[in-house]
Image 1 (cartoon, rainbow, N blue to C red):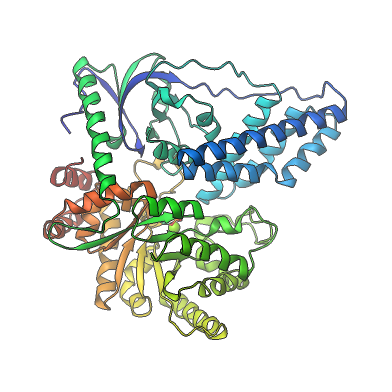
Image 2: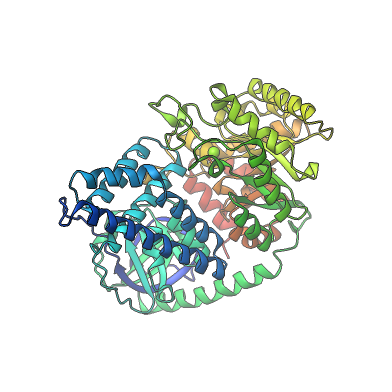
Amino acid sequence: QPATAASAGARTLVGVCAAPGVAVGTLVHWSDAEIVPPELASGSLSAESRALDKAIAAVDAELNSAVRAASQRGAIGEAGIFTMHRVLLEDPTLVDAARDLISLGKSAGFAWREAIRAQIAVLGKVDDPLLAERAADLRDLEKRVLRLLGYANTAARTLPDEAVLAADEFTPSDLATLDRSRVTALVMARGGATSHAAIIARQAGIAALVAVGDALHTIPDGTQVVVNAGEGQLAYAPSALDIEHARSERLRLEGVREANRLTSQEAAATRDGRAIEVAANIATLDDANAAVDNGADGVGLLRTELMFIHRQAAPTVEEHRQSYQAIADALAGRTAIIRTLDVGADKEVDYLTLPPEQNPALGLRGIRLAQVRPDLLDDQLRGLLAVRPAGAARILLPMVTDVGELVRLRARIDSFARELGRTEPIEVGVMIEVPSAALLADQLAQHADFFSIGTNDLTQYTLAMDRCQPDLAAQADGLHPAVLRLVAAAVQGAEKHGKWVGVCGALAGDPLAVPLLVGLGVTELSVDPVSVPAIKARVRNLDWQQCRQRAQDALALESAQAVRALSTAVWPLD
Ligand code: PEP
Ligand code: MG
């Protein structure tokens, strides 16, 4: 990308793109000093207790207005995050733990901080990414309540125009208190592309770069920088020419985004007529509306984990049905692929009394949970089968390893359908996210209606790299040739039996991956709702025959970097 490449004089740090965009600005270190309240209470027990109640109530009100403001701006995902924070804030175990400490003579602030930390310690033992996010949410609530208890250094930072904010990692409340009109990019030393800060940045259209490393902290405050998030670069000490190029690039990208939106409601096909469905990954009804708004052809992955956590008991059949029906209605005729529960042996789900696991990523995850708690899955399947019209919902099974699991589950689904008096068949798909499933794809395809490749887990398990480990964020790349060969194997297996293959992992929304996935025979890409317009536009610029040839070339390469270089050379980014 010669238009934005930094000149030789500029120094660069490399990170991972969390929200695309190009920005020029002044680096500001967003200090995130820990707040340590005094341990002992200064007032009476009841005064400390009242202070805590008041602070919690005030935070709740703050969050409520954050939800409303975000909804009004159309930032649906962000509204969802703050809604979740309100739920966490009301968690009786948290508040009770804090009260117990107050009754031992601790200050309200200390008690709150300890109660939060105890919960984080529990979550820290589990490597489910959703739960890792919960820990970040809790840290955020810790700060909010402490600030309202008067402990925080709330001196409002005056930001320069065009601030590029740097931090180890941002929390949603950091971002909520910012003057966004002044922020042009976020850069994090740690963090992942799926963190809440990344989601907020994407929805706000602010460029964001994560996993830049500790070198970020050595760049002095006030340094002028150029961020090219799409290319994973932060250039400091850029030349005047670099800056000028970056500014014009930014304007050009804004124009492209606008143009993509104009055609986002139309179906996408390559120039030579290969139709590619571009669907959305969602978790809530709000997301479903965002998907429709952004032109998604359907929902390629509804993650249902949110239905199960933060409750006292598992959802009933009727609760399942209602949630899915509301989403199906919002999709107005588009299809939703609904994935069955995919949590591990996590402690967050209080009513799941599962034994702790040494290695939850390799434990009772996904469909394996049914081995110990079949009732959870059965109720979910019954709810799913009741969605109307019959074709509105398809079932997707996570973490399938071999055909035996699929055959058993299909039989179960069929018997529930009979029980419900349902005569229409329901499509059942399999997630290809474990290497064994990709290798046995031809066997699975005999019994599945479709495949959806979960490249997040498929990459993790193929490369033996934890998807939540920030130091591996750059290496755990789904464009690794080994992962692509498994994608190819999955498609070949499916095609043998005339079944279709989609991709619902984050790779589907990576513009450099799109031509290769399409070239390997994938016909559906399921991405973040906000990414739908750009991915449709990308598809429309491709030539399928060329994609097919070049994808074969990519399979012979030796590294993910080599694959990225090939893709960038053949299909330059916008
Ligand atoms: C995946 O593994 O790629 C996937 C889509 O599922 P999740 O990210 O929910 O594990
Ligand atoms: Mg997965």
